[in-house]
Image (cartoon, rainbow, N blue to C red; front, side, top):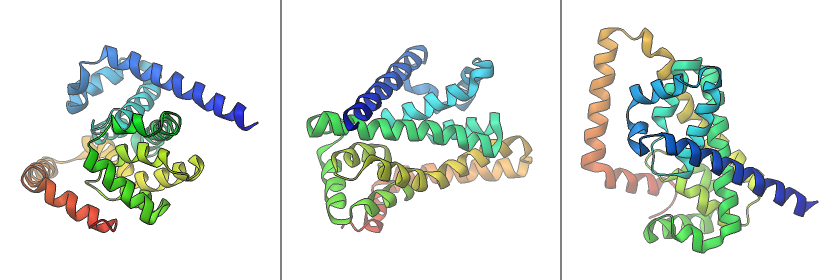
Length: 226
């Protein structure tokens, strides 16, 4: 039975990877993920299949880190509202996360070493060794940490994939819910609210540009990494 489950999981992973590859061939590479207008227009072309587009895009942003997934959440919230936008986004994110867990488990450390810098892999390895499942919960929850890359390192551990999936669900949900809320309410924002949002975004971008490394170090300390 275990062999059959593994084979089925491998087939699902291959099917998802094929879907992601086909979709990525149609996109103007990663720039589309950075342009909400273009991304919204592309998703809208899917018609009644728009939920599937969101699912595939969210799975792709997990597997093809460091593509930011927040903009996909904004688009999902805009089209489907807070509830369904969050549901479709989380389905895609969970499919991507489980695929990353599985690829790492089958491909082993040589595969994971090709996907991230050595110092990032070492930090994730050390945190996983010291704190186990709780470490991954913090990485998925705390901003500024490489949560998508952590999925591949988590797959190298002996932690069962269902447990990893549950932790990914709990840890990622608040961020996805927030981005979908913003997307769903964007059309209701007043001019003043838009100006405040733009100003806050500009300030955050400036802080990340100037203090990005320090913010990440602070986030690592929350997980217990010093």
